[in-house]
Image 1 (cartoon, rainbow, N blue to C red):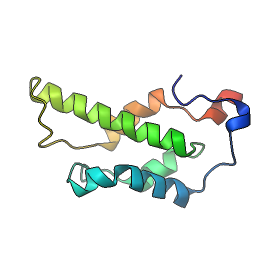
Image 2: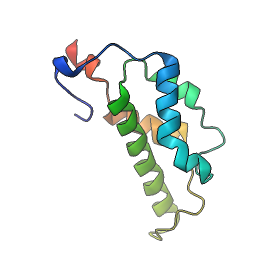
Image 3: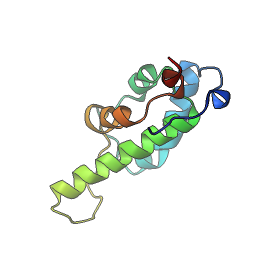
Image 4: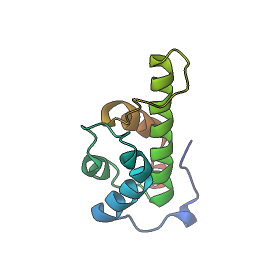
Amino acid sequence: MAGARSKADVTSPLRYDERLRILEAATEKMRKEGALDSNLNLGVMASRTVNYDRPELELLVRLAQGNALSTQLLRNRGDPTTEGLKLTINGDFTSAMVDVKPASENER
């Protein structure tokens, strides 16, 4: 399972503002390129990722970016251009959260 680590690797949970800063940093390039959907609210994502740590949040963003690129390739019928690429909360991030679970959930 993506994001799974040993119990010894798990640190104290990140605060909301820390998770938000990590998500903002991980999506900064896409934001600068205009590739974030206007409905994408990183604050909502920070709220949904309560037990995630930095590596898990960064992996979540990478998978969401991959989901957005896959969607774009399907729309463009295989043309690899990223023009019009938009990272979305309801599609890309939500799908990525299915695959990336916080390590703390594995301890239950």
